[in-house]
Length: 317
Image 1 (cartoon, rainbow, N blue to C red):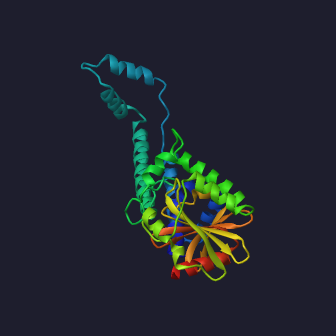
Image 2: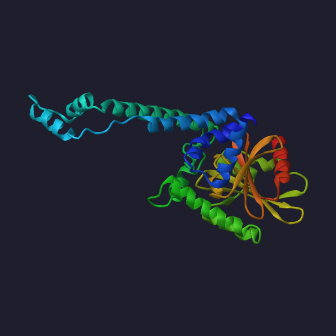
Image 3: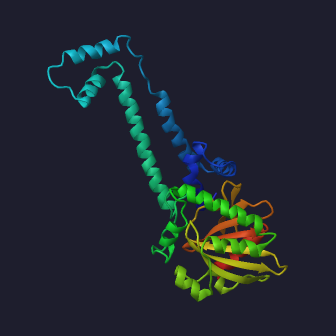
């Protein structure tokens, strides 16, 4: 199992341990852990932290506990603040030691959580799993993204709500794409302030030249290029046609999240020389892979072989 597989799986180990992953993603993590000692050891550490609480002894409460507390309060010779009262109770209580042990376990868990959060933040350019991308991997802010984030947010919603709404829009798009690609494209252009551009126009809006500007593999032609202000980031969308007239769409974007497609089954596979996240779209698949400082998501791909063809070609362009 390659280092790239570990980088992809490791950020999801905590959610996997807590049972928070979708079934397809959970199966992918479980399969990886079976053959990777490093990730298996990290998963075991999460389980060990949880067992600290289960093993912490808590002595039985004395029957005259409240009588003891009342006697202590009635004999106090100075004002007793809540903090002083609690400290005295912990020190003299027969199960105060158990409470201290539990507090120590909580501190251990919090420390592990902070470390894990920093690790996850380093592995991904975005913060929490579905935070909205405001900056590119090269550190600059793309023109129009700040305006987009306010314009397309659901009033009063959280970043999670916005990405959930985005996944719903993408689901509608995926349903339209096979039978009416023109209507599907117009829907996205209308929804996310799309602007049809050439390569130079894209540079002015996103700060880079689209990867398709160097050409496509044999059997494909470029139909159109546009820039969309989507909730994840401002991205470049390239509509491509196969020789048989069918449609393939390439999104070039700054975020690495797979939340575009909701809870659809996904897996990690080697395509060409890159690790790709493959998502089942019923009649086709979507594939996301890292391309330089950005990511590319191909929608409407027929199979893993076609993904490998695109990855290999674009990697050389």
